[in-house]
Length: 151
Image 1 (cartoon, rainbow, N blue to C red):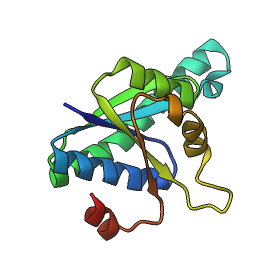
Image 2 (image 1 turned 90 degrees about the horizontal axis):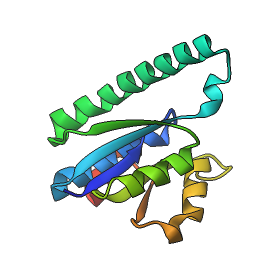
Image 3 (image 1 turned 135 degrees about the vertical axis):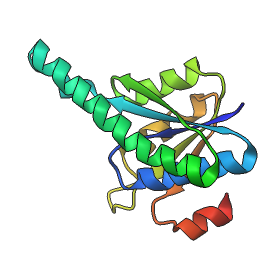
Image 4 (image 1 turned 120 degrees about the vertical axis):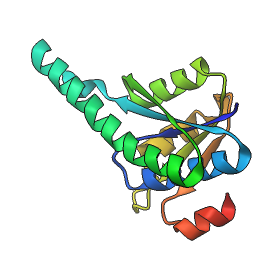
């Protein structure tokens, strides 16, 4: 089954990327894989404190994921899977793509800030020519109705 890989983070544009991935998967019979990356700089503390912070980050990610997963299951009939990796976001995304041959498309949400689409979109776009799968960039300004119309 072809999977849409979407990145879970704390940005506003993540919501539109999640919606787009779920709608496309629902309409094409695909799956959704949600990837959350915990950056290493969150744990540069004493070992015990770092372990506790890592566990708290995982719990926060799982709770955030469950909100999206419930909507995907209830509204789109898609049962997403969660993958949590630790490291720098772009290398971890690239590693996930290489390790999971079912990933067919990477879905990224573009920010609406005047500074640009966001660091993840910018960095992934630089690597786009070397990726084994296409990237779909979902504008952050699209409404639910617009997303439904284009998927």
